[in-house]
Image (cartoon, rainbow, N blue to C red):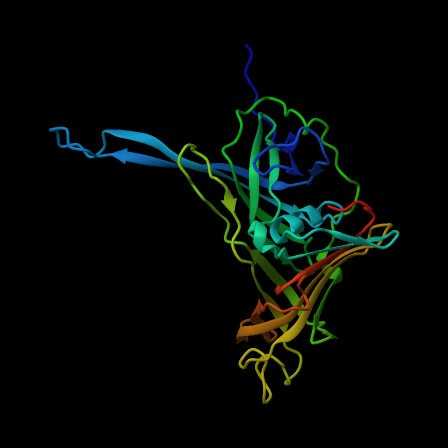
Length: 336
């Protein structure tokens, strides 16, 4: 007796490619294959209820498909050879490459009023080991980074795009040859947190979120969005910090940085100590306002948690104002 076996999730993969024409999957080009965990694809379809009276005590006579936008979200570790494509997707600026190896990739917030300041759109192919789904016109919505000394640096990214193409058992061009880099996932213990140009050695863990408030715009004549539109950029996060001084700068002194308007330069740098070629990712927030400090004695040692909001400034901007700028150092010479 032959029984069909379930498909093994570990045989799946995800590829992402920038689009030349928004909403159209390129026939060729450079696909970044990102090692992922827990990928999801969700068709967000609005169902329209028909409750019109028909001489019967009935609530629902029909369910009619309405508009639809598909969502893709996945987790990945910080692989500095592919992660800049994620940064460009959420921030949008051109990747400025300097250096002769290692190469320095500077990506910031795109400010281009004539084109709606829109980051590039992407086509994403998710092969779940059973079928391949391609979502064109994908626009990044949110990027969450989390890090602690006993973990790898983890990122969760969410995109919104067009309804997927009819799934097939194998992906077509340009997703024909999934290949993955050999770069090592970066551990979080070698992360440095600089506040007001001084390294803080007491950070236990942290989170950082970049949001674009991406939403579909629906117009007549098609079920899918036209287009998926990214909104303004917001950056915020939090730290858990060991208290080893009675001069805690966040909640003590005459001008505690979390209790008064006192914006600080904040730089979080993720270093990779295991790669042959130096790799790192630096997130610079020249004006960070610390807020909502909470001191806790629930453990055997005193600690505090504090939130921060990155404030727009000209220093971090490619043009105009921006709350953040990213600098990735790796062995990749080509711009993302």
